[in-house]
Length: 134
Image 1 (cartoon, one colour):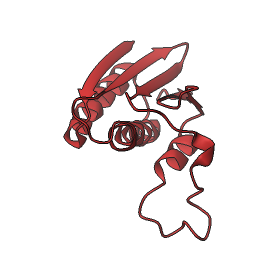
Image 2 (cartoon, rainbow, N blue to C red):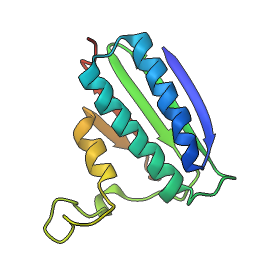
Image 3 (cartoon, rainbow, N blue to C red):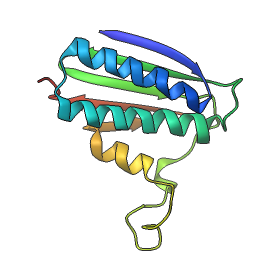
């Protein structure tokens, strides 16, 4: 199973991504517990791409690829921004950041996915989910 979508950098387009995740997980037969992990991770990644990568510029696109092969689901999110270095993102669990309103997306993604990889440029993330079937 493979699905690719391309959206403008508008927060309202998150609904398109949610629908794509719903369709893909239904076709694959993913358990409800795993569905939640996948949906939250994907939405965080796309939201970060729209807000932080493309700075809400509707002229810039976000590409989302959903691929299921060898019993693993891979979701890739790529923006047209300049990228970032994941190791520079503050830990949201430290006392000085615990009450911050933002900054939990990468933390959530890394704890919900079985594996997370960033491109060298830092404008693309691949999240891998294993053992996800009902």
